[in-house]
Length: 161
Image 1 (tube, rainbow, N blue to C red):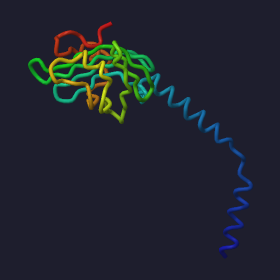
Image 2 (image 1 turned 30 degrees about the vertical axis):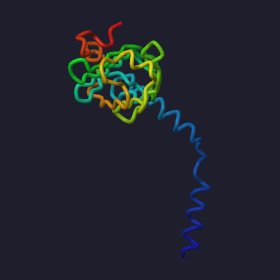
Image 3 (image 1 turned 60 degrees about the vertical axis):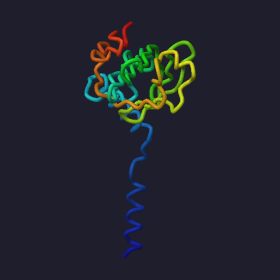
Image 4 (image 1 turned 90 degrees about the horizontal axis):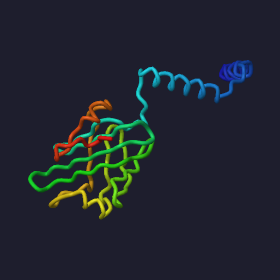
């Protein structure tokens, strides 16, 4: 009985038309691209939006793989960092805040994580004991309009052109 069932399955498999697995992949990619273009689903590689944690704010504007980025860390009177620059990437972001402050920010789902130690040059953007080290921000919005209007602790737009 078992031998007969195995033989039947083998015969059915032999009669099935051969399929190119690449056809399914291509069709799936085309469908996903059409859904992104129509605004039905978002591009997961796109980092655009507003990120925040407590009083810390970050904006990302533009489109993958090139962005404008601005970050504001505010620990109170005389304890803050404000930096503006560019970022590149379709996953993790290579962030350049100028004057040698360049590092990779990791993306973990809807969270953006700065390295435990940013380059020493990043301290030029900070006052007091504030730092950009170990900054972890959650995405609050994917809207580029909100990101372009985000203001830093200095009251100025963070992602202005």
